[in-house]
Image (cartoon, rainbow, N blue to C red; front, top):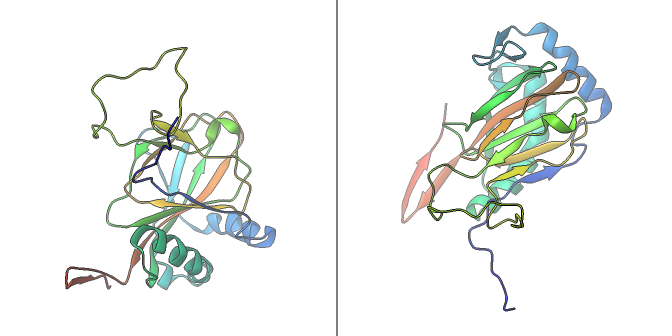
Length: 207
């Protein structure tokens, strides 16, 4: 067999134990001070208000912790070390039986998930290949077919521990299947670079 070359792969970055136990506990406690909104699809999932990190001291500190990871992941996406900032942060609180419908994040380039509780295997985040992409019209999904990176359409996030961080391109579709475990708490956020430049033109992002 000749060499197989993976063209145009999609990166997902994992950082284990970015937050220590004390920081995780502090953010879990922080949820109590924020107003929650029930998800449109299930009352077993709620989201806190979206916070501008620059206007909240605890989230501003978190933005500083995330900075180096965003720069590193941004270099993978864009081939250059850029200055990044977290533009918005919120908590997700999912009870037993809750789920998150498939979606992507608009108006950002890097999105992230920080896990604050232990994940039940059923509630791992699932990334899905873009719908209506450039694949064959016909598929070959049957009991004899082996699923791999070139024919699979879903990828389950590995088991995550409290304090673990995952970064991914904001356009990547993702969802959470029905949670059969206990309460699942995460911090979600979106980030943007200071600027992007191409062919002598640049676009800058500022508040």
